[in-house]
Amino acid sequence: MTRTRTRTSRRFAADAGLLFAAAAFVLPLAWVLLSAVDPRADLRVKVPDGLTFDNFDAVLNEDVTFRPLLNSLILCGGATALTVVCAALAAYPLSRFRSRLNRPFLLTILFATSLPITAIMVPVYALFVQVDLIDTMQGTIFFFAASQLPFAIWLMKNFMDGVPKELEEAAWTDGASSFQSLLRIVLPLMGPGVAVVTVFSFVMMWGNFFVPFMLLLTPDQMPAAVSINEFFGNRGMVAYGQLAAFSIIYSTPVILLYVLVARKLGGGFALGGAVKG
Image 1 (tube, rainbow, N blue to C red):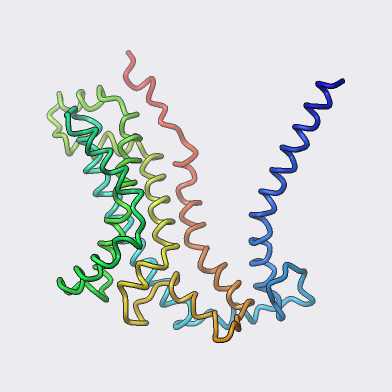
Image 2 (cartoon, rainbow, N blue to C red):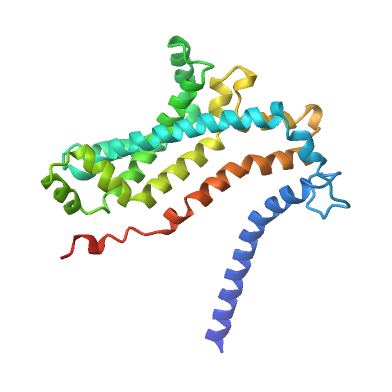
């Protein structure tokens, strides 16, 4: 009886902890969904007295939503593509060739991932001013990619280690170069890994407020992560309904990206039988 009670108590405590954690995620999401259609939205999570789409009508215009979202897509899409390409090229020799410098290099990469972005923004800002990259989309893309690249290389290398080298050796026998084997064999077989790196990089850049706020000065170039600050007015006045509506629209590209790569994320490498026989 004592053991049964102990197990029941532990199970109850675990269930209560899980419910509390779930509520911590569900309540903010419920507030966003309900406040977006609430004509009198505030900080409370409540069922609206009446439904309205005026909040969406107020934010669906070029200045508030369309131009910032386009800027975000250009910045994050370009930086993600650059990050994935550079990470694949950097991870390939680390995965396929053995050297005494591999481990120190990987540890340096791991250390670079722990550096806070605020600690390097002052020298980066000064450098960008000197090389005329301040207030430019391409400069922000380069910095986005550079800041995300260390962790992307680490992830890409771990996924690339799961691709059997025997497959590349067969391609080399047929006359393929290392670059051709990377493009035609390694990357297609590690599709789930490339998808993970792509989604992770894009999401981290999509929600970044500080970098574009510091490096971009022209309002027309600001991404959605910065323009969302416009909904917070003076003296604590906030347009909660419009803020919630904009948050839903702002989250849509990330959700769509995840849906598009869900098959790759759910798939496995399944390479065990590829080198048999």
